[in-house]
Image (cartoon, rainbow, N blue to C red):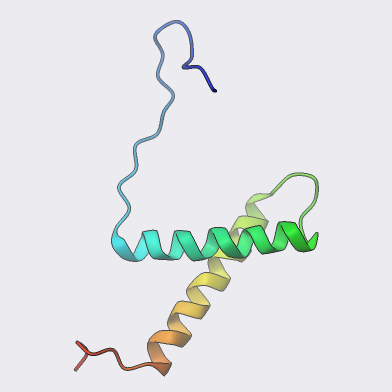
Length: 74
């Protein structure tokens, strides 16, 4: 288990993602996982790998928004 840094410094990040951001984060993390499993990334995941996964997640969300009329949409 990871130990907190010594010396009293706290390097943790605090984030509060909105519902849409959380949903896209979930999708992008699954897409990135698929890239890794498929061998599309190098030894280390780069910012470009993450950007590609996020871009794909957004593209899919926009496609779904245009293709499906939700119950509460007018």
